[in-house]
Image (cartoon, rainbow, N blue to C red; front, side, top):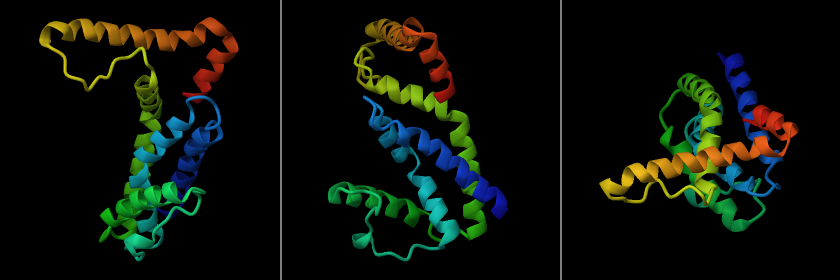
Length: 169
């Protein structure tokens, strides 16, 4: 079980590295933030599997990798809550849940990235906004057209971009 757990940890690190390496590119840092927000529960499961029940007071928990004091506190606070939610889980159960969550994340990552990019695209209207029933069908058509346009941009510029897109998504 431990071997599978450490393989899942390495897989998670590789998935996160894709976002971390591209964070300096335009609109890519937001994807790293979205990825981190989506995976705070994995941090909690990892800490529970390695350390056990939470042993750090809430007010003192900062993210040591963050250079900004404010972001260090915000990310640390979210990580603290994720770890605190796992309180009482056995290390074995936490490892098992971590492995399952990483496998689930790996299978749905490409659709999540598309969803996150759609949220950033100004051509796509806010999908959570209220619309009347009469406008709903037209709105769905607009959203689908905008998504298709965003995805087709890659094909127009160069085959190398298309190949790079396939490997990164």
